[in-house]
Image (cartoon, rainbow, N blue to C red; front, side, top):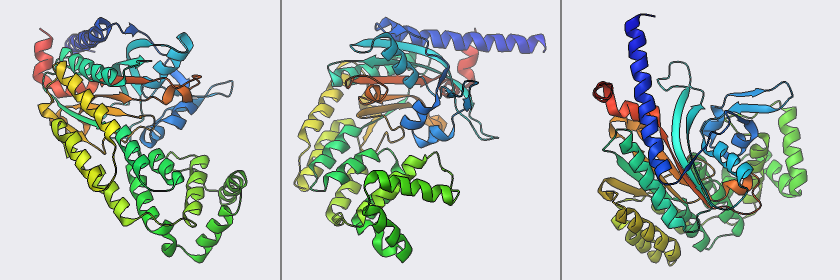
Length: 398
């Protein structure tokens, strides 16, 4: 390697370390304790709780003892596991920086190894205040890393839960709509199926017979039958879905055959709700008008939304470049409420340099005895660097 190349590499390394340190300082200055989650993680933790995109991109292997492990694809879940080991309950504020790994197809411009710097706040009693603080800290950290201008996209999955709870539909459908909300493509298919009596008219006699047979069995027996059918047909899980998930979808379709269809009015309301893209100052008013016209109220959830925006505004974040989208944030399974991204428009579809949100159910699924409120954020160093461009690299090296 030439001395020039070595010098350039060393300069780039110093710039990266300086940016990471500057961002970490923002979180540490807000009383977040630095932690270093293990690089190796149990694969099942991510297979069960992450989005399908991440599942397909895990680096998974089996250790000599037979345990299935993976390289961490992000640092949120590893930090949650560390919290449970160190605290097990109560409030805690952790921050971190380190490598994460996701498989990228050959020829992809994205790195398979990248650096995340972020923070997680566990056990905060004031959810709206904690949400606002996390977005504000993410914005401050991104600026400390050198990016002064960015757009903000926000959403709130709790609003959709409130909408579904207010609808006059079977309770089983409510839980399914909530459970699959984070899968946009499948969610659309689900709503269409519920609105067409399970798609019964489009099914063959053989399909109808199988679904009717499954519907006549108890859940345990039905799952066993589906597993046997998949094994006999030598059908392997695809698209990151496990046999259990495939079985669940079969059982849902079977239940649909005996249920009344979702009304077109309700299906249209869900569609209109998820299509909203609003300025934060207009969000609560517009959503309230939509739900009122449908004869329902989600005022408690909207009051939380309004208070969160007020707190963010009081902390000095300019929301004039922000958008609130009711369908935003549907990429990771564990999010339960407020979600956000800080985006660099020049990077297009890959413009999210930072993101985060609330995940109140994740800790309990990982072993906590009770539900632990939690919210966090993470900044991707490589995207931040790309957003800054070559001029920023040059100036930073002086």
